[in-house]
Image (cartoon, rainbow, N blue to C red):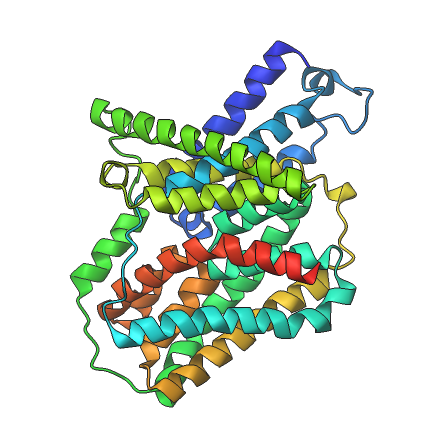
Length: 399
């Protein structure tokens, strides 16, 4: 691959997320789609317009320039997740839930997803390629978020284009679930479950919505911001190095398990580092980690040659996802009725697990109930922390 091609490709992957984030803030309809889905669209287009060689013989000038692109793609996609995991964990505050309802919703919501995966696996697994890995990735995603799904896919050695396809299915099903919650689910839950007095602090909700829509990277290039980022990157590189050493040792005892132990050790050390005040208090850790996820997203999408993808299990995979989400929501509501958890806390817990914490302010606004903001975000922290462990555990058990 020509040096110019390497430079152009790396610059594209590194800078494209910045451009998409800018568009998401400036163009309302693009903002509603979200940066990750937009990056998938762009990456998929790049993958299928013929600028990357399909074989060993370049067919045009572009393919000659970008010959060997898979090596760059593999390097970037492999590096982004180990760097992202600890950075996204440093700023989290792990503490006991402040209320009974939040604690119950947190535990029962996590249990609901786990039970739904266990119940659905025997029904759908025979129709899904690499079913144990798919189940592990979706368990991680539906208890944590995209970063957990990406982490577990790396731990399990899932190919980039297959990950992109599975993540696309999740976006389709989870978006449908979110629309259902906002259109019907909230009102239905309030008819079935107790309803507490709504605390509609519009300013608090608006502040969270504005926070999610604002530029999270503002000030990152100021000297104070750069110092924090460089410090956190140093800690992250140390964690990655230690994790690699631990994984090498354990994989000698259990051959073929290096990547699994590598990701789990990074997760554990990232959580441990969040309790260290000088690490926890630094700014831009989560944002930097999320940017690495954005780079990972466009890289894996650009590896997804549509002609090479296997769509044979698409309907069964989507059915498996839909089953998990419907059953987990049903179990969440039933357990809330048993334990007398209020409707809004139960629903926000389900949304946090299924759709991830960034959707909490949107649902709180739809509920007109700012009281569920902090419970939803607190539950999300637990999901992020638990997702990698659960994903690897289920992939191992089902395998």
